[in-house]
Length: 315
Ligand SMILES: Nc1ncnc2c1ncn2[C@@H]1O[C@H](COP(=O)(O)OP(=O)(O)OP(=O)(O)O)[C@@H](O)[C@H]1O
Image (cartoon, rainbow, N blue to C red):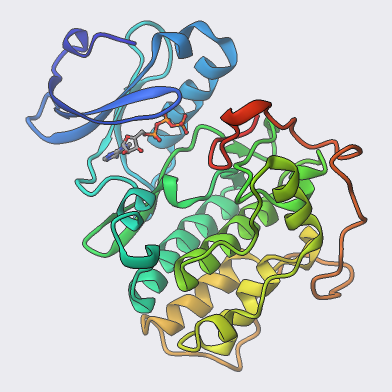
């Protein structure tokens, strides 16, 4: 890991979190502003793929600007002085905040506001031709009730291509199949987050990678409005469609954003307005994907033994 004291102008205040690839500190920057300072572990810098992922996160966090993306201030993408300075969120990541709540559940309107913001960030990324690939509460930061999506390490521009990845609880069927990801894969992950935040439970469960894969590929969650009657039908229907097994059957992030915005009262509801949809051949709702078994699936390999972690990104 870079020595934080050796990054000119930054004063380390205290550690705030540790991930697989980096350590994050609360620090003060050259202007005396409190920032989150992310420093890669030594092991990250020594591993080419991990180092490239860190560099990708630095470059894209500084390049992509949106009110609902974690704001990057400064950084160095590579080398022993690699770092990323970004907005500091005192409450940490959303998953860390959920742990403290009864039944891991936010009040419905709070959850809907967070989801609206994440959907808004995805609309921006998708319009820019980018795919995030790791939408999950661990990568969402909330302050004052409003959210920002972070961790652009796996993000890529479709025009340039990128390595497929995802986290098993949030990963779309096409990624389990070993196919490429697209904006529709992000919409699927957002659909999982909608279920999780609006009901307190993830729609697909499994105690091993294989069980979780089978669940994503073959099961259908209960209608969202049965699980939470406070959710308007328009939002519930789109969340269910976001979990369509076939990418082409999912709505665009813009449709989800529009419906969520109307729900939280940020724009007047427009029931007559056509929802923007992802280009699609057939619209068979929740059409099942061809049956796959753990043996024939081409998706990312399941880790062995007890170290299986459904939140950990697969590459
Ligand atoms: N901007 C921020 N503000 C406050 N805390 C943060 C911020 N960014 C990260 N953290 C804290 O640091 C922890 C580690 O960050 P993060 O998950 O981004 O690390 P990582 O090494 O990139 O993760 P991964 O395991 O996905 O490689 C987070 O769980 C969170 O607690």
